[in-house]
Image (cartoon, rainbow, N blue to C red; front, top):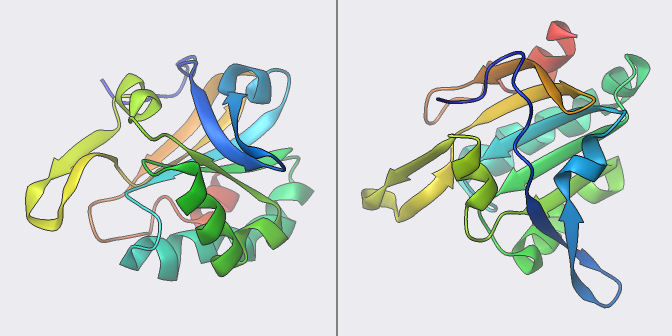
Length: 161
């Protein structure tokens, strides 16, 4: 069953680019004792993800921080090299968004947020969603229909806070 309010976030080891190449990030360590907004999306450099979802969080960052959000994390089923390049090209890194890769879809599957759409080459990709997490527990989770970014965008999450 997909993430629901009250759930403990599944632990996972995700990847990001560090100074010396890919490095592991234990999700449980990032969430412990903190308020985090985590948003998942189908993939880096894809249409709605690039033109709507990531920009919505860039635009909402000041408001999210003002409401006590410690970190905003974007997770996609891509490799850390792609997530690094995408974060640079969209301005996500400059805005303070943490871009994490879930290359084998392990976290996405554990959260039951995976979907497959062979006609567009998506296998075990992430649904479009955003969650407010306090100390590892899901407080709010909002999921969008494919091709839309209404419920899971930065403004919608800001409003949910």
